[in-house]
Length: 305
Image 1 (cartoon, rainbow, N blue to C red):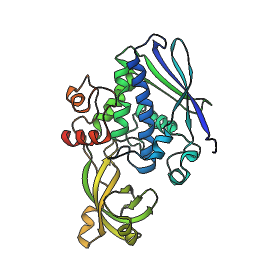
Image 2 (image 1 turned 180 degrees about the vertical axis):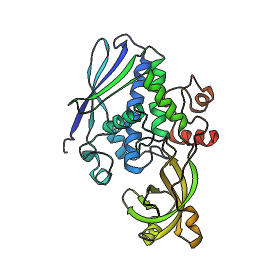
Image 3 (image 1 turned 90 degrees about the horizontal axis):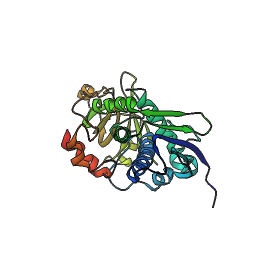
Image 4 (image 1 turned 90 degrees about the vertical axis):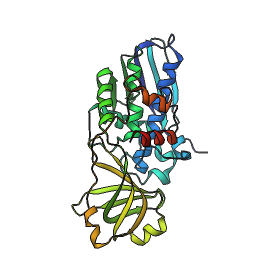
């Protein structure tokens, strides 16, 4: 069996002693890193960070994070992750947001960096990814001063402290609730293996999508034609549409020009908040962090919308 290529990262949690710390803090950190890597990678590949049902096997393999060092003092871990191309080349060769030698941890770091910078137009942030990143606020309430993650070569580093965790919470609060929309445009691309698609609108803007209810057979016949699609639209923190999960697709009619625009959402009630700010969210999802399944997250989003 071929040996997978792995890359190494340094994770440091300042403010706690690695050999005298609550196991719950270590659990919370591990959940944050593993689930964050999974959701950020799935968003880059499929255009969505969470979905109903069982996670694909390649996603579990991609977020196979392993500890290489554990030392006394501020929690300092050496963590390795496999390169995505080595995990499932047929899946990751077709994504466009990550470098060819990237890992799931790279996807998580890029998403975290965009969130820390308050990048509201990021393609790497949606409600699912922000829900994970917002959990860093709970760490800051338990004696943690900062979380620093650095790629071993020094190419990439992100630090999350109490101030940046508040910025992440603000992005999460401002991200509009996903909602069902209609969009009309030219079906410009369709990738059969990942069910990914791309709609080109009249103004030249592009909306990425994923065939969920719509069949690939139907979409193949519509490739290159003007179509009307309907499905759940997820938004960036800016309010611009990030993706659409297409349930229905059909040739566009002349009257469908009304829908030939990029959907835009308005910030509503908090979608992702810390338990200290919204106990009702905690009651919906269980105790922090991340004990909820994807199905539970979708149900909670529906109840809050």
